[in-house]
Image 1 (cartoon, helix red, strand yellow):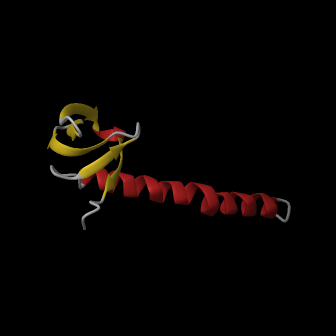
Image 2: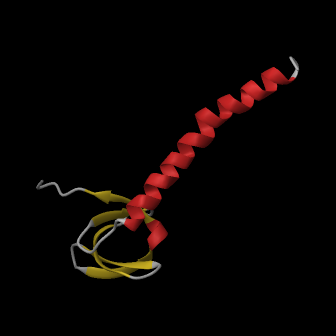
Length: 87
């Protein structure tokens, strides 16, 4: 029994230091994706910033300045919702 104790302790430490924080981060990202709405300013994983025009089941249409280009990206490409500088 004492030989298994260090092994179990290592598993518990790995869970709390590596696995659990990643699960929490994934849950927060999924919640952010489900709360997206037209008009939100977002940044994609590729670094493109734009404003959401419309949301489809698996894609989002963005308006990208300065020429107001319309781009369609997959929903999972959204990295974060950015805040307006004016606020």
